[in-house]
Image 1 (tube, one colour):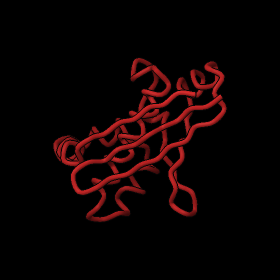
Image 2: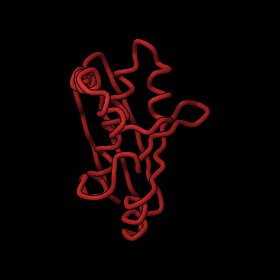
Image 3: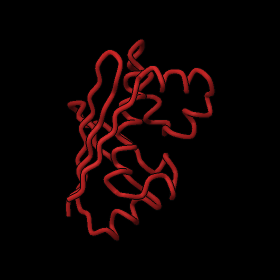
Image 4: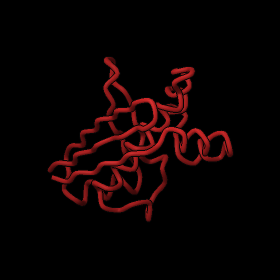
Length: 122
């Protein structure tokens, strides 16, 4: 089992998005952008939470962003709103080569910060 956790200031993600739209295109998939923008005035909390989840996944996997792209890690939500991670490309290969069979994610945010925790298990 491997654990990854990340915490980020929501304002930092908001500033990155407002400063340069390329940030959204580089980090988030179209499905993630649609999800976050559907949150209206709370979209930056959602963007920050998804970013933290991607970072936590990379920490659990032990690779950082040396390989692949942010787009290969997608945070989806089930019918009840619970997040789950869909991986593809390089990260899926690393995940499978590591012998992992399951990934769990939890995301939380408050007024100023967002955090996520990821557990990979074999």
